[in-house]
Image 1 (cartoon, rainbow, N blue to C red):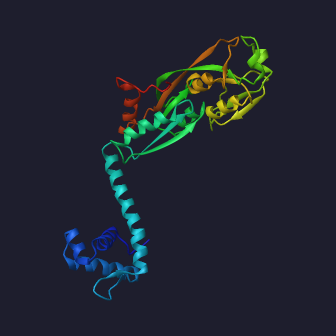
Image 2: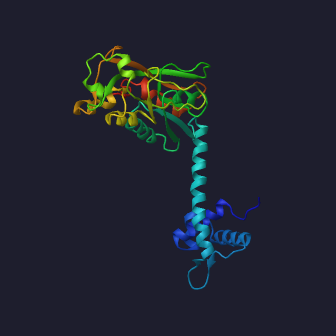
Image 3: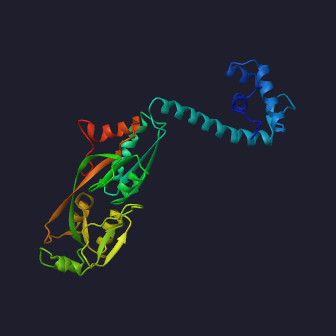
Length: 303
């Protein structure tokens, strides 16, 4: 497709408007005035429009010139961004890093790391998304993520990824103080728990088999999107189930949720991982890995 617009002409147009005259633009761009005039005349000829109204002592943009300046500045910003990204890629920095965050992870701590990252690599785009349970692993093995923070349990077979322990998360069985199980003698038996609806966060896997956690055979289930919705549903007495202790400490202290011992114990521990595509060798991924577990003070996610 042929076009009469080039970046040099847009740079000249922008400079004329900012500097106030053709002569001032020539000075700013370190060019002779005739080359500025020629660039605008050629642009007008190519587009078959008049960009400047030359009546009077000063040239003013026409409506067509105003429109071209508005769109052209967007193109100049885009061209500058592309140039910076290409230079970064050439030096080993990714143009984009896709990070999946498991719903077990406090998002504010992820944003703290992103804030620190942008101070040294502002031109690498970070694309954050959230997955639940096996959806974290699914995003990694399917190629939708370069890095996962908070992948629970064992990874899928097939390889193609590396992992590092993030830590163990303590889960406790909790009920609303208004729920019938709140007054039952502990430890609660599975047969007793089975009589009441459970609340479960839906696995977000697209290709891998979905995972379930601590659901009893035959138990009614209210399915929600993530652990935060699960906690809210359980506080309302809509169901029961296990939740991370760190997530509901304030609710437990306030009496909005009660920890109940079950026949399986007072709590369970679940290992959570960082995981990344093993073929990915960019500097952005290396930076995140260093921040998360290679420093003397790695991120403590659960306190």
